[in-house]
Amino acid sequence: MVTERPDRTAYRAWRTATTRWSDDDVYGHLNNARYFDLIDTAVNAHLHDATGLDIRTLPAIGVVAEVSCRYFAEMGYPRPIDLGLAVERLGTSSVIYRVGLFQGDPADDGALACAEGRFVHVYVDNDDPARPVTPIPDVIREAVAPLVV
Image (cartoon, rainbow, N blue to C red; front, side, top):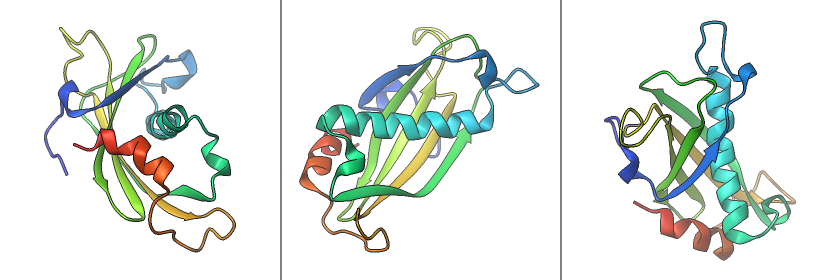
């Protein structure tokens, strides 16, 4: 696991999220719960876009086994957030993602991550979620393999 504050080169796929007035907490910072929404959305939106499928209907689905976030700098409304996505580990039944959250101009204050999430998907049978699936479905593996760092 990366321990220092990552820069934009640590990620392979990108998307942008808009911030909303209601995303900030009483102190004017992005609320902690919003970070986790963004991390989850970055991963699942990539899977949807890369496969062209509704991933909820696949025979095997990724369920979240772990999610965490390290905070480095404040973020908040009204600036957009760039979400960088990378795969730390592509296993036989799980994927470990890293999602960098950046705010600001990359040439100025937005070159380093404001936060980084770690997100673990374990693949299970869609009809019997108690049963892990090995190997990860090919369509998912093909969507995430280019993200491996």
